[in-house]
Image 1 (cartoon, rainbow, N blue to C red):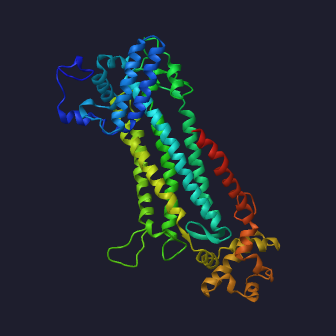
Image 2: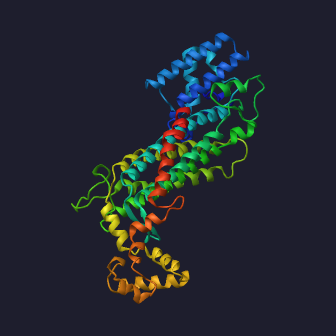
Image 3: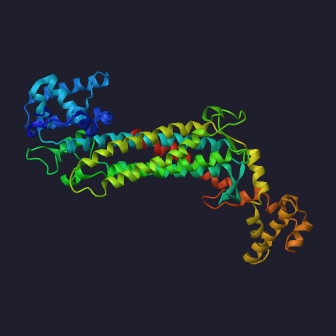
Amino acid sequence: MSNKMWGGRFAEVPPKFVEEFGAVIKVETRLCPYDIQGSLAHVTMLGETGILQKEDVEKIKEGLKLVGKEIDDGKFTFNAEDEDIHMAIEKRLTEIIGLTGGKLHTGRSRNDQCCIDSYLYFRDAAKECQKLIIEIQKAIFEQAEKNFGSIMPGFTHLQVAQPVLVSHWLMAYFWMLKRDYARLQSFLDRLVECPLGAAALAGTDFPIDRWSTAKQLGFEKPTENSIDTVADRDYCIEFASIATISYMHLSRLCEEIIIFASQEYKFVELSDDFTTGSSIMPQKKNCDFAELIKGRTGRMYGYLQAMLTMMKGIPLAYDKDMQEDKFLSYETIDLWQNTMKVMAPMVRKMKINTRRTYQAASNGFSTATDMADYLVRKGLPFREAHRVVGQTVRYCVENDKTFDDLTLEEFKVQSSLFEEDIFNDISLEHSVDARKSYGGTSPEAVKVQMQHAERLLNEAYKKKVSAL
Protein backbone atom coordinates (compact mmCIF):
# COMPACT_ATOMS: atom_id res chain seq x y z
CA MET A 1 0.00 0.00 0.00
CA SER A 2 1.19 3.51 -0.76
CA ASN A 3 2.22 5.69 2.21
CA LYS A 4 1.48 8.90 0.31
CA MET A 5 -0.89 11.38 1.92
CA TRP A 6 -3.23 10.65 -0.96
CA GLY A 7 -2.28 6.95 -1.04
CA GLY A 8 -5.45 5.31 0.23
CA ARG A 9 -6.62 4.67 -3.33
CA PHE A 10 -3.34 3.05 -4.43
CA ALA A 11 -1.86 -0.38 -3.81
CA GLU A 12 1.56 0.20 -5.35
CA VAL A 13 4.25 2.82 -4.87
CA PRO A 14 5.92 4.42 -7.93
CA PRO A 15 9.59 3.43 -8.44
CA LYS A 16 12.09 5.98 -7.13
CA PHE A 17 13.11 7.20 -10.60
CA VAL A 18 9.43 7.76 -11.45
CA GLU A 19 8.92 9.72 -8.22
CA GLU A 20 11.91 11.89 -9.05
CA PHE A 21 10.62 12.46 -12.59
CA GLY A 22 7.31 13.76 -11.25
CA ALA A 23 8.63 15.70 -8.26
CA VAL A 24 8.92 19.48 -8.26
CA ILE A 25 9.95 19.82 -4.64
CA LYS A 26 13.63 20.61 -5.21
CA VAL A 27 12.74 23.44 -7.58
CA GLU A 28 10.03 25.13 -5.53
CA THR A 29 11.74 25.34 -2.14
CA ARG A 30 11.70 29.12 -2.58
CA LEU A 31 7.92 28.93 -2.04
CA CYS A 32 8.28 27.60 1.51
CA PRO A 33 7.80 30.91 3.37
CA TYR A 34 4.78 31.68 1.20
CA ASP A 35 3.31 28.23 1.82
CA ILE A 36 3.65 28.78 5.57
CA GLN A 37 2.11 32.27 5.21
CA GLY A 38 -0.84 30.93 3.21
CA SER A 39 -1.39 28.05 5.64
CA LEU A 40 -1.38 30.38 8.65
CA ALA A 41 -4.04 32.54 7.00
CA HIS A 42 -6.08 29.47 6.06
CA VAL A 43 -6.04 27.91 9.53
CA THR A 44 -6.83 31.28 11.13
CA MET A 45 -9.91 31.46 8.92
CA LEU A 46 -10.85 27.86 9.81
CA GLY A 47 -10.86 28.95 13.46
CA GLU A 48 -12.82 32.14 12.78
CA THR A 49 -15.58 30.20 11.03
CA GLY A 50 -15.72 27.46 13.67
CA ILE A 51 -14.66 24.77 11.20
CA LEU A 52 -11.76 23.94 13.54
CA GLN A 53 -11.63 24.19 17.32
CA LYS A 54 -9.52 26.97 18.79
CA GLU A 55 -7.07 24.54 20.41
CA ASP A 56 -6.49 22.79 17.06
CA VAL A 57 -5.92 26.11 15.35
CA GLU A 58 -3.34 27.21 17.90
CA LYS A 59 -1.62 23.82 17.79
CA ILE A 60 -1.38 23.98 14.00
CA LYS A 61 -0.09 27.55 14.07
CA GLU A 62 2.65 26.68 16.51
CA GLY A 63 3.56 23.64 14.45
CA LEU A 64 3.72 25.68 11.24
CA LYS A 65 6.03 28.17 12.91
CA LEU A 66 8.32 25.34 14.02
CA VAL A 67 8.37 23.94 10.49
CA GLY A 68 9.14 27.40 9.16
CA LYS A 69 12.03 27.77 11.58
CA GLU A 70 13.46 24.40 10.53
CA ILE A 71 13.33 25.57 6.91
CA ASP A 72 14.95 28.92 7.75
CA ASP A 73 17.69 27.18 9.75
CA GLY A 74 18.41 24.75 6.90
CA LYS A 75 17.39 21.73 8.98
CA PHE A 76 14.41 20.71 6.86
CA THR A 77 14.86 17.68 4.62
CA PHE A 78 13.24 17.83 1.18
CA ASN A 79 12.54 14.40 -0.34
CA ALA A 80 11.35 13.59 -3.84
CA GLU A 81 8.83 11.15 -2.39
CA ASP A 82 6.96 14.12 -0.93
CA GLU A 83 6.41 15.45 -4.47
CA ASP A 84 6.07 19.12 -3.58
CA ILE A 85 6.61 21.51 -0.70
CA HIS A 86 2.91 21.53 0.20
CA MET A 87 2.96 17.82 1.02
CA ALA A 88 6.41 18.03 2.61
CA ILE A 89 5.39 20.79 5.01
CA GLU A 90 2.11 19.13 5.94
CA LYS A 91 3.90 15.83 6.50
CA ARG A 92 6.46 17.46 8.77
CA LEU A 93 3.71 19.37 10.58
CA THR A 94 1.95 16.08 11.33
CA GLU A 95 5.18 14.55 12.58
CA ILE A 96 5.59 17.44 15.02
CA ILE A 97 2.03 17.88 16.33
CA GLY A 98 0.43 14.56 15.48
CA LEU A 99 -2.79 13.84 13.61
CA THR A 100 -4.09 17.34 14.25
CA GLY A 101 -1.75 18.43 11.46
CA GLY A 102 -3.99 16.62 9.00
CA LYS A 103 -6.81 19.06 9.77
CA LEU A 104 -4.91 21.95 8.15
CA HIS A 105 -5.95 20.85 4.66
CA THR A 106 -9.65 21.11 5.49
CA GLY A 107 -11.47 23.15 2.83
CA ARG A 108 -8.56 23.54 0.45
CA SER A 109 -6.64 21.62 -2.24
CA ARG A 110 -3.08 21.57 -3.44
CA ASN A 111 -4.48 23.29 -6.54
CA ASP A 112 -5.50 26.52 -4.82
CA GLN A 113 -2.63 26.16 -2.33
CA CYS A 114 -0.17 26.14 -5.21
CA CYS A 115 -1.83 29.25 -6.65
CA ILE A 116 -1.70 31.27 -3.44
CA ASP A 117 1.98 30.41 -2.91
CA SER A 118 2.76 31.50 -6.46
CA TYR A 119 0.72 34.70 -6.23
CA LEU A 120 2.57 35.73 -3.08
CA TYR A 121 5.94 34.84 -4.58
CA PHE A 122 5.28 36.63 -7.88
CA ARG A 123 4.11 39.68 -6.01
CA ASP A 124 7.44 39.95 -4.21
CA ALA A 125 9.42 39.06 -7.32
CA ALA A 126 7.73 41.81 -9.34
CA LYS A 127 8.45 44.39 -6.63
CA GLU A 128 12.09 43.35 -6.53
CA CYS A 129 12.31 43.65 -10.32
CA GLN A 130 10.90 47.17 -10.10
CA LYS A 131 13.64 48.13 -7.63
CA LEU A 132 16.31 46.68 -9.94
CA ILE A 133 14.89 48.58 -12.91
CA ILE A 134 15.18 51.81 -10.93
CA GLU A 135 18.85 51.07 -10.22
CA ILE A 136 19.59 50.78 -13.94
CA GLN A 137 17.63 53.97 -14.61
CA LYS A 138 19.67 55.77 -11.95
CA ALA A 139 22.90 54.59 -13.60
CA ILE A 140 21.68 55.82 -16.99
CA PHE A 141 20.57 59.15 -15.54
CA GLU A 142 23.95 59.65 -13.85
CA GLN A 143 25.74 59.06 -17.14
CA ALA A 144 23.39 61.43 -18.97
CA GLU A 145 23.99 64.10 -16.34
CA LYS A 146 27.75 63.58 -16.39
CA ASN A 147 27.95 63.85 -20.18
CA PHE A 148 25.32 66.55 -20.68
CA GLY A 149 26.05 68.79 -23.66
CA SER A 150 28.34 66.28 -25.40
CA ILE A 151 27.49 65.47 -29.01
CA MET A 152 27.51 62.14 -30.83
CA PRO A 153 26.16 60.87 -34.14
CA GLY A 154 22.66 59.45 -34.04
CA PHE A 155 22.11 56.43 -36.26
CA THR A 156 19.49 54.80 -38.43
CA HIS A 157 20.37 51.52 -40.18
CA LEU A 158 23.64 51.84 -38.18
CA GLN A 159 24.56 54.65 -40.58
CA VAL A 160 25.28 58.17 -39.32
CA ALA A 161 21.99 60.07 -39.44
CA GLN A 162 21.88 63.28 -37.40
CA PRO A 163 23.85 64.65 -34.44
CA VAL A 164 22.30 64.15 -31.02
CA LEU A 165 23.33 64.76 -27.45
CA VAL A 166 24.97 61.79 -25.76
CA SER A 167 22.46 62.38 -22.96
CA HIS A 168 19.59 62.06 -25.43
CA TRP A 169 20.88 58.68 -26.63
CA LEU A 170 21.29 57.41 -23.07
CA MET A 171 17.88 58.64 -21.92
CA ALA A 172 16.19 56.65 -24.68
CA TYR A 173 16.92 53.57 -22.59
CA PHE A 174 15.65 55.27 -19.43
CA TRP A 175 12.18 55.61 -20.99
CA MET A 176 12.21 52.03 -22.28
CA LEU A 177 12.81 50.89 -18.72
CA LYS A 178 10.04 53.18 -17.47
CA ARG A 179 7.62 51.20 -19.64
CA ASP A 180 8.99 47.95 -18.21
CA TYR A 181 8.40 49.30 -14.70
CA ALA A 182 4.87 50.34 -15.66
CA ARG A 183 4.12 46.88 -17.08
CA LEU A 184 5.15 45.35 -13.77
CA GLN A 185 2.90 47.81 -11.96
CA SER A 186 -0.02 46.82 -14.17
CA PHE A 187 0.82 43.18 -13.46
CA LEU A 188 0.69 43.88 -9.72
CA ASP A 189 -2.55 45.80 -10.12
CA ARG A 190 -4.12 42.67 -11.62
CA LEU A 191 -2.70 40.31 -9.00
CA VAL A 192 -5.15 41.47 -6.35
CA GLU A 193 -7.66 38.61 -6.20
CA CYS A 194 -6.94 35.79 -3.76
CA PRO A 195 -7.13 32.23 -5.14
CA LEU A 196 -7.20 30.50 -1.77
CA GLY A 197 -10.54 28.78 -1.22
CA ALA A 198 -11.11 27.74 -4.83
CA ALA A 199 -10.06 24.25 -3.64
CA ALA A 200 -9.57 21.60 -6.33
CA LEU A 201 -11.80 23.31 -8.93
CA ALA A 202 -15.35 23.51 -7.56
CA GLY A 203 -14.92 25.35 -4.27
CA THR A 204 -15.70 23.58 -1.00
CA ASP A 205 -18.74 22.57 0.99
CA PHE A 206 -17.15 23.84 4.23
CA PRO A 207 -18.43 27.28 5.29
CA ILE A 208 -15.09 29.02 4.66
CA ASP A 209 -14.67 32.78 4.58
CA ARG A 210 -12.60 33.62 1.49
CA TRP A 211 -12.77 37.34 2.26
CA SER A 212 -10.93 36.69 5.51
CA THR A 213 -8.00 34.88 3.89
CA ALA A 214 -7.87 37.47 1.12
CA LYS A 215 -7.62 40.30 3.64
CA GLN A 216 -5.02 38.49 5.77
CA LEU A 217 -2.79 37.97 2.73
CA GLY A 218 -3.09 41.51 1.39
CA PHE A 219 -5.50 40.95 -1.49
CA GLU A 220 -8.52 43.06 -2.36
CA LYS A 221 -10.99 40.19 -2.77
CA PRO A 222 -11.33 36.50 -3.62
CA THR A 223 -11.26 35.29 -7.22
CA GLU A 224 -14.66 34.99 -8.89
CA ASN A 225 -14.56 31.55 -10.53
CA SER A 226 -13.02 28.51 -8.87
CA ILE A 227 -12.42 26.65 -12.16
CA ASP A 228 -10.63 29.60 -13.74
CA THR A 229 -8.66 30.15 -10.53
CA VAL A 230 -6.89 26.79 -10.51
CA ALA A 231 -6.66 26.59 -14.31
CA ASP A 232 -5.06 30.03 -14.67
CA ARG A 233 -1.40 30.61 -15.42
CA ASP A 234 -1.90 33.95 -17.15
CA TYR A 235 0.16 35.61 -14.45
CA CYS A 236 3.15 33.36 -15.24
CA ILE A 237 2.85 34.09 -18.95
CA GLU A 238 2.31 37.81 -18.39
CA PHE A 239 5.35 38.05 -16.13
CA ALA A 240 7.45 36.14 -18.67
CA SER A 241 6.23 38.51 -21.39
CA ILE A 242 7.20 41.57 -19.34
CA ALA A 243 10.59 40.05 -18.58
CA THR A 244 11.12 39.21 -22.24
CA ILE A 245 10.33 42.73 -23.43
CA SER A 246 12.59 44.23 -20.78
CA TYR A 247 15.37 41.78 -21.58
CA MET A 248 15.11 42.82 -25.22
CA HIS A 249 15.67 46.42 -24.12
CA LEU A 250 18.73 45.42 -22.09
CA SER A 251 20.02 43.41 -25.03
CA ARG A 252 19.74 46.40 -27.35
CA LEU A 253 21.72 48.54 -24.93
CA CYS A 254 24.35 45.83 -24.62
CA GLU A 255 24.63 45.56 -28.40
CA GLU A 256 25.24 49.31 -28.68
CA ILE A 257 27.80 49.18 -25.88
CA ILE A 258 29.61 46.34 -27.68
CA ILE A 259 29.62 48.23 -30.99
CA PHE A 260 30.58 51.55 -29.43
CA ALA A 261 33.38 49.94 -27.39
CA SER A 262 35.04 48.57 -30.54
CA GLN A 263 38.27 50.11 -31.83
CA GLU A 264 36.40 51.37 -34.88
CA TYR A 265 34.11 53.52 -32.72
CA LYS A 266 35.80 54.03 -29.35
CA PHE A 267 32.73 55.87 -28.06
CA VAL A 268 32.63 54.00 -24.75
CA GLU A 269 34.91 51.96 -22.56
CA LEU A 270 33.69 49.49 -19.97
CA SER A 271 35.55 49.26 -16.68
CA ASP A 272 38.03 46.42 -16.28
CA ASP A 273 35.79 44.53 -13.86
CA PHE A 274 33.07 44.23 -16.52
CA THR A 275 35.36 43.00 -19.30
CA THR A 276 37.68 40.06 -19.88
CA GLY A 277 40.89 39.44 -21.82
CA SER A 278 42.02 37.01 -24.47
CA SER A 279 44.05 33.87 -23.78
CA ILE A 280 46.30 34.61 -26.76
CA MET A 281 45.91 38.30 -27.70
CA PRO A 282 47.17 40.50 -24.84
CA GLN A 283 45.69 43.72 -26.25
CA LYS A 284 42.09 42.53 -26.11
CA LYS A 285 39.45 43.95 -23.76
CA ASN A 286 36.27 42.03 -24.46
CA CYS A 287 32.75 43.10 -23.46
CA ASP A 288 31.98 39.54 -22.38
CA PHE A 289 29.26 40.35 -19.85
CA ALA A 290 27.37 42.56 -22.28
CA GLU A 291 27.71 39.77 -24.84
CA LEU A 292 26.38 37.21 -22.36
CA ILE A 293 23.32 39.36 -21.64
CA LYS A 294 22.72 39.70 -25.37
CA GLY A 295 23.17 35.96 -25.84
CA ARG A 296 20.86 35.01 -22.99
CA THR A 297 18.02 36.96 -24.54
CA GLY A 298 17.29 33.88 -26.63
CA ARG A 299 16.95 31.84 -23.46
CA MET A 300 14.49 34.39 -22.07
CA TYR A 301 12.43 34.25 -25.26
CA GLY A 302 12.43 30.47 -24.94
CA TYR A 303 10.91 30.55 -21.46
CA LEU A 304 7.97 32.60 -22.72
CA GLN A 305 7.47 30.38 -25.75
CA ALA A 306 7.63 27.24 -23.60
CA MET A 307 5.05 28.68 -21.21
CA LEU A 308 2.66 29.55 -24.00
CA THR A 309 3.12 26.13 -25.59
CA MET A 310 2.55 24.36 -22.27
CA MET A 311 -0.79 26.10 -21.78
CA LYS A 312 -2.16 26.07 -25.31
CA GLY A 313 -4.04 22.75 -25.14
CA ILE A 314 -4.79 22.18 -21.47
CA PRO A 315 -8.45 21.41 -20.75
CA LEU A 316 -10.03 22.88 -17.63
CA ALA A 317 -9.18 22.78 -14.85
CA TYR A 318 -5.81 21.59 -13.50
CA ASP A 319 -3.47 19.20 -15.31
CA LYS A 320 0.02 18.09 -14.32
CA ASP A 321 1.49 19.88 -17.35
CA MET A 322 1.00 23.06 -15.38
CA GLN A 323 3.67 22.01 -12.90
CA GLU A 324 6.20 23.07 -15.53
CA ASP A 325 5.32 26.68 -14.73
CA LYS A 326 7.68 26.47 -11.75
CA PHE A 327 10.77 25.54 -13.75
CA LEU A 328 10.06 28.17 -16.40
CA SER A 329 8.95 30.98 -14.08
CA TYR A 330 11.82 30.66 -11.62
CA GLU A 331 14.42 30.60 -14.38
CA THR A 332 12.77 33.65 -15.95
CA ILE A 333 12.83 35.56 -12.67
CA ASP A 334 16.38 34.53 -11.76
CA LEU A 335 17.80 35.36 -15.17
CA TRP A 336 16.12 38.77 -15.33
CA GLN A 337 17.03 39.77 -11.78
CA ASN A 338 20.64 38.54 -12.03
CA THR A 339 21.07 40.38 -15.33
CA MET A 340 19.75 43.63 -13.92
CA LYS A 341 22.14 43.31 -10.97
CA VAL A 342 25.02 43.19 -13.47
CA MET A 343 23.63 45.86 -15.77
CA ALA A 344 23.36 48.75 -13.32
CA PRO A 345 27.02 48.86 -12.17
CA MET A 346 28.26 48.09 -15.69
CA VAL A 347 26.48 51.18 -17.04
CA ARG A 348 27.38 53.31 -14.02
CA LYS A 349 31.14 52.62 -14.38
CA MET A 350 31.20 52.99 -18.17
CA LYS A 351 33.32 55.85 -19.59
CA ILE A 352 32.15 57.83 -22.62
CA ASN A 353 34.77 59.29 -24.93
CA THR A 354 33.05 62.56 -25.82
CA ARG A 355 35.96 63.77 -27.94
CA ARG A 356 35.60 60.69 -30.11
CA THR A 357 31.80 60.95 -30.34
CA TYR A 358 32.09 64.58 -31.46
CA GLN A 359 34.68 63.68 -34.08
CA ALA A 360 32.49 60.88 -35.42
CA ALA A 361 29.52 63.24 -35.73
CA SER A 362 31.71 65.72 -37.63
CA ASN A 363 33.01 63.13 -40.07
CA GLY A 364 29.74 61.44 -41.00
CA PHE A 365 27.86 64.24 -42.81
CA SER A 366 25.39 64.16 -39.91
CA THR A 367 24.21 67.73 -40.63
CA ALA A 368 23.13 66.95 -44.20
CA THR A 369 19.48 67.38 -43.21
CA ASP A 370 20.30 70.79 -41.76
CA MET A 371 21.88 71.74 -45.08
CA ALA A 372 18.72 70.68 -46.93
CA ASP A 373 16.57 72.66 -44.47
CA TYR A 374 18.83 75.67 -45.05
CA LEU A 375 18.15 75.53 -48.80
CA VAL A 376 14.42 75.10 -48.20
CA ARG A 377 14.39 78.26 -46.10
CA LYS A 378 16.11 79.98 -49.05
CA GLY A 379 13.15 79.01 -51.23
CA LEU A 380 14.28 75.73 -52.83
CA PRO A 381 11.70 72.89 -52.88
CA PHE A 382 12.69 70.14 -50.45
CA ARG A 383 13.15 67.47 -53.12
CA GLU A 384 15.52 69.72 -55.03
CA ALA A 385 17.32 70.60 -51.82
CA HIS A 386 17.65 66.90 -51.07
CA ARG A 387 19.27 66.38 -54.49
CA VAL A 388 21.71 69.26 -54.03
CA VAL A 389 22.83 68.02 -50.62
CA GLY A 390 23.23 64.46 -51.87
CA GLN A 391 25.34 65.83 -54.70
CA THR A 392 27.43 67.81 -52.19
CA VAL A 393 28.01 64.70 -50.08
CA ARG A 394 29.14 62.81 -53.19
CA TYR A 395 31.58 65.61 -53.98
CA CYS A 396 33.02 65.40 -50.44
CA VAL A 397 33.38 61.61 -50.59
CA GLU A 398 35.11 61.76 -53.97
CA ASN A 399 37.52 64.43 -52.71
CA ASP A 400 38.03 62.98 -49.22
CA LYS A 401 36.54 66.04 -47.52
CA THR A 402 33.99 66.78 -44.80
CA PHE A 403 31.49 69.64 -44.81
CA ASP A 404 33.88 71.55 -42.54
CA ASP A 405 36.59 71.35 -45.22
CA LEU A 406 34.52 73.02 -47.95
CA THR A 407 34.96 76.65 -48.93
CA LEU A 408 32.06 78.96 -49.78
CA GLU A 409 33.11 78.76 -53.44
CA GLU A 410 32.82 74.97 -53.37
CA PHE A 411 29.37 75.28 -51.81
CA LYS A 412 28.27 77.74 -54.50
CA VAL A 413 29.31 75.26 -57.20
CA GLN A 414 26.55 73.04 -55.80
CA SER A 415 23.98 75.86 -55.44
CA SER A 416 24.09 79.63 -55.73
CA LEU A 417 21.78 79.84 -52.71
CA PHE A 418 24.61 78.99 -50.34
CA GLU A 419 25.90 82.02 -48.42
CA GLU A 420 28.37 82.58 -45.58
CA ASP A 421 25.74 81.63 -43.00
CA ILE A 422 25.80 78.01 -44.21
CA PHE A 423 28.79 77.32 -41.99
CA ASN A 424 26.83 78.17 -38.87
CA ASP A 425 23.71 76.29 -39.96
CA ILE A 426 25.58 73.03 -40.54
CA SER A 427 27.66 73.14 -37.36
CA LEU A 428 26.99 70.29 -34.93
CA GLU A 429 26.08 72.74 -32.18
CA HIS A 430 23.56 74.59 -34.32
CA SER A 431 22.05 71.34 -35.55
CA VAL A 432 21.53 70.04 -32.03
CA ASP A 433 20.40 73.38 -30.58
CA ALA A 434 17.82 73.83 -33.33
CA ARG A 435 15.88 70.68 -32.44
CA LYS A 436 13.90 72.19 -29.59
CA SER A 437 10.68 70.28 -30.24
CA TYR A 438 9.33 68.46 -27.18
CA GLY A 439 11.31 65.23 -26.83
CA GLY A 440 13.98 66.52 -29.22
CA THR A 441 17.74 66.52 -28.81
CA SER A 442 18.46 70.19 -28.06
CA PRO A 443 20.03 70.85 -24.65
CA GLU A 444 16.86 72.74 -23.74
CA ALA A 445 14.60 69.80 -24.65
CA VAL A 446 16.85 67.15 -23.11
CA LYS A 447 17.02 69.17 -19.90
CA VAL A 448 13.21 69.04 -19.71
CA GLN A 449 13.08 65.26 -20.14
CA MET A 450 15.84 64.82 -17.55
CA GLN A 451 13.92 66.98 -15.10
CA HIS A 452 10.91 64.75 -15.64
CA ALA A 453 13.07 61.66 -15.18
CA GLU A 454 14.57 63.02 -11.98
CA ARG A 455 11.12 63.83 -10.63
CA LEU A 456 10.02 60.30 -11.48
CA LEU A 457 12.97 58.80 -9.62
CA ASN A 458 12.61 61.08 -6.61
CA GLU A 459 8.85 61.22 -6.24
CA ALA A 460 6.60 58.81 -8.13
CA TYR A 461 8.88 55.79 -7.95
CA LYS A 462 9.79 56.50 -4.35
CA LYS A 463 6.15 56.56 -3.33
CA LYS A 464 5.33 53.35 -5.17
CA VAL A 465 8.35 51.44 -3.90
CA SER A 466 7.74 52.51 -0.29
CA ALA A 467 4.12 51.40 -0.63
CA LEU A 468 5.04 47.98 -1.95
